[in-house]
Every structure is written in structure tokens, then in C-alpha cells.
Length: 335
Image 1 (cartoon, rainbow, N blue to C red):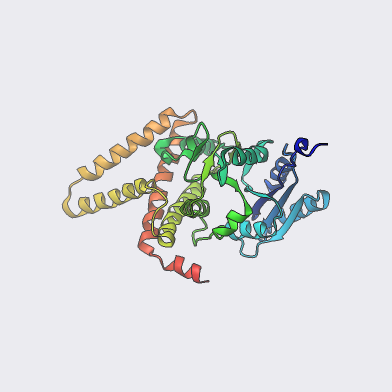
Image 2 (cartoon, rainbow, N blue to C red):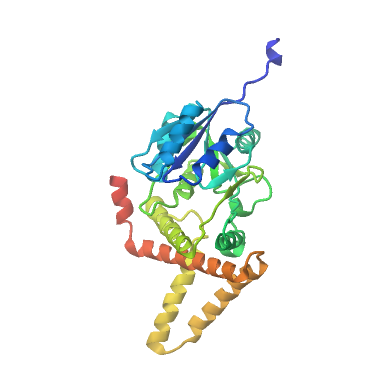
């Protein structure tokens, strides 16, 4: 075959997957990843953080059945060191970052690689598409799909390829990953992706979202789990502030101002007896989450509750992180 007519071999891909106690979902996740239509060499590196629910044994069984699956230990348990441990042994031309709480379209990997190649971007990923499996989880998904709940971030709402500040999960080259130091963990265990792409863009590298890179994310299914998650998200954003000297965007300020306004309104009420500042703020906020609830296709009162929980706990987490100061972040960096 003449040299100019030879087919170019597709680049190799390493999927990096951190897990901890993912017994309920790991089989379905690995099944979907091994069913990818990608025609190039593919490996899946699972970094297990010491699972004690049987997830390690399930992955070990996959390793025995399919030589594309590899298993490495993540003694630090957290997601960031797990991703770094998997990337350290990866042999692919591209890294595709996934997690154990999502389901992936059969062309997830191929579209990720195609988007990187066609756009020339340094990183590419899809939107976060939440799909609940229980009544409250469906309400959380509906609330997450509203800009009035989550803000205008394009990785939630993009309908075309475009450059963005962050994406859900993502694909990139190992050299770029190593150049910025991989993922960095915080005391909250949250905000790793936001921090990763913030440092990525500050290094001059680009990020593109493509809505055709399709996956679905399973949100928290109970109010308690949602509140804990969003408190950690808020705390994680302040940890980014202490680590980077700035917030990644202005979006976290809205829930912070809401909580600060409520606190100040309560102080005014207690010290002066004036109730109208607090009542005016609460009325405006309740109208906003009421609009979210009325526009949603899920149970309106559950959506109302979910949006309220997300706003308040995120804002409270931000405020707590600011009050606590930079010491926990500095200590973790020193360790």
C-alpha cells in the first residue's frame, strides 16, 4: 500500500476511574466502558481506595476476564489521588476521566477523542446531565437543569461546541495532565475538577464542551445526602480561594450573598426589631426557587425543596470555609 494511502491508526486511550465502595454500580459502569465503539487500543485503569463493600472483588473479577481492565491501589482513598495513581500507570495517548456514578454512551470515548482532534483543544468533555432514579433524585435533577439554581455555567447548559471554563469529567493528553500536576485534593474532598480546570486554563490551555459527548450523572437521592454534598461543594470553593488566590468564577458569590443576607437580616431583626429587610430577601429568594419549581416537570414541591437545600447549604459551606480560614488547606498542602 502506498505510504500516503495507509490508514492512520487511532490513538490509544486510557480510561482512569477512581472508586471507593461502588459495589452497586461498578459492574454497570465497567460494562458500558468495555462496550465503547472506539476502534483504537483501550484500557481501563481502576484506582480503588480500599473498598470494603465488595467493589474491589468485583473489579478483580473483571481483571481476570478482560485484559483491558487494570486495578491499582489508592491508599489515600480520595478521588484526586486515585485519579493521579491511575494516570501514573496509564499508557494511552489520551486520558479519559470517568467516575463510578455515571453512565456512558457507547460513543463517549470516540466522541471525546474526535472533539479533541477536530477542535485542537487541550481538554474536551460533555455536559453534566443529571438523571434521578428516585422521586427526590428526579427533583434534584430538575433543579440542577435550571440556570436559576446552578447559574449560567455552560457545562450545564451548552447546546453546541464552545470553549468553557470547565466540563464534566473530560479527556486530555497525559503530558498536559502531568504539566499542571494532575488533580489536587482539598480537605472537603470536593472541587477537585473545578480546581483542575482552573489551573488548566491559567496555564494557557483550552477546554471545550461538546454536548455530543454524552453521559448521565446520578444525583443524590435524599435531602440529607444532597445537603452534605452541597455544603462540601461550597467549602471546596473557598478552599480553591485559599489555594489559588481567587474564586474560579463569580458564580459562587450568589449563594454566599444569600446566606450572608439572611444572617445580617436576622441580626437586624434581633437588634432593632426591623423585620422587613429579612422578609424582603426571603420573598425574593422564594420567588426564584418557586419559578424553578413551577418550570420543572418533576414534583414541584420536591424541586422547590431541592433548590432551596442546594442554595442554602452551598452558601453556608462557602461562609464556613471563609470563617475557618486557609489553615486546613495550607496543612494539607504541607502534608
